[in-house]
Amino acid sequence: MKILILSLLFAALAFGQRADFYKEDITFRLDSISFDVDGYYWFANRNSQPVNSDIFYPFPQNAGGVIDSVRLYNISAGQKTKYKQEANFGISFQLTIPPKDSSLFQIGYRQQVKSDSAIYILKTTRNWGKPLQNAVYKLVVPNNLKIKKFSYTPDKIYNVEGYTIYYWEKINFMPDKDMIFYF
Image (cartoon, rainbow, N blue to C red):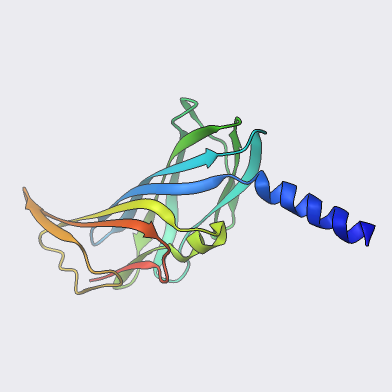
């Protein structure tokens, strides 16, 4: 019984020290050659102790080709962040947040287009255990590239100087599917 109580206490303390992923703002650029993702990700530490977590950032496996560049920058610290490439599955990096503070990261990658769709993985948001407070997504495509179908219908569409920009804004967003653009 003591072991069970200690295990539950340890689990509660460990869970209490987890970072909170609460917001993202992503710009996608898609053309016939590549799919570029450039995102801002907000994390918070709502605890009185520092948080040190390994973060896994996944890449889509089946829709595209090789990931030929990755960018990871800790805006809050004003520095590039080291990461470990996890084969073609994604990257992992260390997230450290002081007590009662937050961190803003910029993460991006470019993937070769090898099919008639591009995917941004959203379903892994569920692993954080709560919805994103706010999520903004923008897809920028040249006017000659027609998007036939979306997994999420855009909220707004703009045409600006030879480009079409699709816009989504979600509040308390718990994705039930990935963001997929069919062209």
